Structures are given as structure tokens and as C-alpha cells.
Length: 180
Image (cartoon, rainbow, N blue to C red; front, side):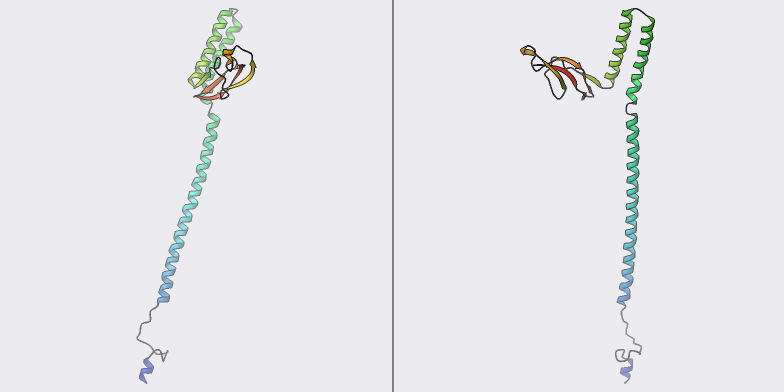
């Protein structure tokens, strides 16, 4: 009978010297630790994501602001250089009002035109040479056609409006008269 009292299977109230493994509690504790680590990692990743999105939004705003400033001041350099030509025009206008010598006026106006051309040339503006060249729809806009001798057919015979390049890119078509 003593055996039955000490046997925990037969007598649940009896204390047993047998260690019952607590696998369920250990697994639960390990699972809780693992879950806490996953939640912590998830929150860290979420925080990094939110910061990255905020940084990108700031970058977009900054970039848009810089682009607007660039657009607003893009022509500043050319305008400043053209102001010198405008000053020369003002001086030429004064001279025209004060003198009757046509040759002197012509010479002064020619100097202003040359300064304007050289200023634009220094900024990368170059004229498109069209007269006596073959008509090219990529460079020319035909205003009209006129009858010409055979050797001038398909060529530009007159230029109504000059075409221009800016740094080797066509910025204005030449308006021309073409021989037919």
C-alpha cells in the first residue's frame, strides 16, 4: 500500500520526486520573447520607413523649390549682358537726337548691332545660314515658292526671318522663300 501512496499516478495528492518538464511554460516564454523581438523589429522597420518617406518628401519639396528658383533666374545671365547693349542703345538714341550727321549715326548704330551680335554669340547663339542652301524641313519653314532657274530649284532663295541655334540646337526655324 505504501507503493500506492507514493505513486503520483495512483494518488495525485501525493508528492512525487519525479521532475515533470515544463515544456509548455518554457515554450510560452520563448514564444513571448520571440514575439516581442519581432514586434520590436517591426516597429524599428516602420520607424525607418516613416523617416525615409519624410526624407523623400523633403527632397521633393526642396527640389521643386530649387527648380522654380532656377526657372525664375534662368535668363538672368543673358539679361545682364543685354543690359550693356541697352545702355549703348540709350547712348545712341541721345546721339541721334543731338546730331544731324547721318554717317556718325549710322556708325554708332552699327556698333550697337555688332555688340548685340557678339554678346549673343558669346552666350552660344549662332545664326542659321540658309540662303543658297537646299531646303530642309528640319531647319526651314517655307513661306512661299517662286519660279527660279533650274540650278536654284529646291534651294532657299530668300530669307524672311533668320533662324538661330543655341549651343548647336535649333531654337528658331528660318522662314524662307524656296525656288521651284
